Image (cartoon, rainbow, N blue to C red):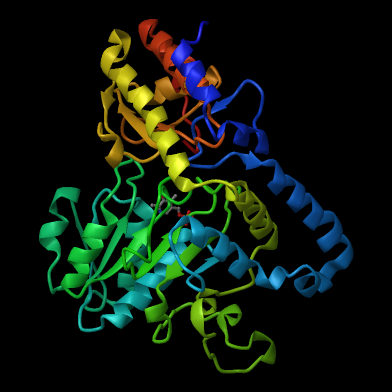
Length: 412
Ligand SMILES: *Cc1c(COP(=O)(O)O)cnc(C)c1O
């Protein structure tokens, strides 16, 4: 296949081109699923190996001090803080996104205790809605009630009845980006506390939590941050809320003095009170090392490359005849689109399986969406061009109709 000169030129001028070498990328695969599980940074593998053989294997329990295991949640939190526009002392790595949502939802409701409604978007990632439902079952409908509305109705629902606005910055299906600044401002003007889920934005798009005066945020370590399967999540609590916070999962690691083994809970000051139990050190180590990939990287250059790469896909779907039967679910306007392209088709599942079979790893989301995640740190323009070419051939020759592409597994 011949690659057009302009594509080769873009790759030659790409300041992120060398980043690819910092990842382990299996031969024969081009990976368009970094929005679901980021590829493995070589440093993460080396660090985990070292933690296994030396720290766990030899130094054993001494490692909590000797290798600062105990400080990893804060250390990792500060590395993430730089990527999401948070100044020091407001971000910590712990637990999963779902669990962190539970903590900040409960805390936010407590801070706004005259109200009890949590406003969210009906097509939010389900776990976000489930966590509100679970809290509601625990506290009762009169202390926590989920109001979920279509995206278009969010603004008109921002009124003095709402306690908390909980939104995901980037929609997991469409990749559409919310205007964080505007929505936070509108909500806070009505006395609403704002929680942002950054699962699909941290490490992919610029975020300015402090500048947007956000109250709380959570996000994933294993998507664009490349921290590995089930990597710890992170949680942000604005400084101004930390003194009066009531975090409901009052585990000993969030205690002011865990090793005094006091029988009464006393929260640690600052962001440390967001911890619950013992951190999973192997995962923390992987995430800690994975974040070093971002050391010399400006999120703005990641964003610029990502916009160009997703545009290449969008432009092709709009202009190539064989691709016209795919409908574009993501925003056409690059400014509103994060680092993925969602295409709808009635045979979406089979098309994703056929692409994977050809070495282009994408994923399928119910009911009919092909999700193409773009990670500029390890995908070149040539990779994207080859993806579009493969998709064109698959659609032209209807290769996805083979029966083997209809078989579904447990995880899609
Ligand atoms: C991926 C994702 C999650 C995942 O939550 P876990 O508890 O880490 O499994 C949560 N929310 C959103 C919006 C996501 O995209």
